[in-house]
Image (cartoon, rainbow, N blue to C red):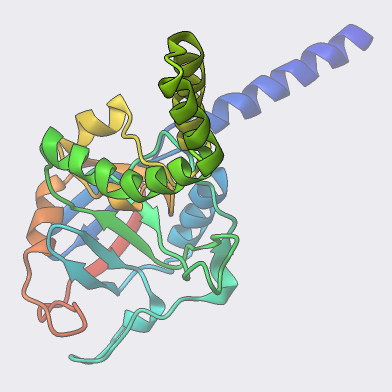
Amino acid sequence: MKYFLLALSLLVFNAVNAQSQVDHIVEIQTNLGTMRFKLYNDTPKHRDAFMQLAREGYYNETLFYRVIENFLIQGGSRSSRNAPPGKRIGYGDPDHTVDDEIVPGHIHKKGALCAPRQPDEVNPFKQSDISQFYIIEGQVFTEGQLDTMEMAVNRPIRKKVIKEVYTPEIKAQLKQLKAENKVAEFREIAEKVKADIEAKMKLDPKTLVFTDQQRKAYTTVGGYPDLDGKYTIFGECISGFDVIDKISKLKTDTNNRPYTDVMITVKIIQ
């Protein structure tokens, strides 16, 4: 009996584990075409919340109300349902927030399905508003452009670190060693200063270094790297990239709302 119960529990565990690894596919239908998305299993809170709202028809008949070419298309807000032309929309729903699930390997490449949120000053824990979603269009970057982005972010950080490590006392000590022609001692201290600067740069969370994955994506399919690490990405487009392009190119008003309404229907495929 004991072995039977053990075997049964293993079967249940394996079934649950297998279910968690199944690819969940959703379809976002619009009057400009249909997109399909794979939801990530390593962002289960967002995946499950999105699918639950989709089952309830929460997103149906809402609009893509915020459209910015070479950036993103955003929709799903209930305030967009039946909204008259020109109305400012896109308010969040405090009843549908989810704890952040920011995974380093998930990046804002073209077609990334993401959750918006309130700014850090009012939302320090980066909770997502899953009652809405945005899809990245972005743009294709060159390697040089990515290098420039890294330099723009890292230069002021490096300047601050150098000031902390390369103190007046260290400068005076090196100056004295140079005057005394003590090459070995000079090099030892100089190398330590250099190593300390590099170590502090790596430890600073604001330092920007694009991974090989990011560089490959942003120089091929494109995207919007500036958002990486700041918002939860819980899925990616697997078909219908042309629909993203069509929506992103619509003419918009001063609130970035398209003059042509793009209505949403979300269906769970599997």
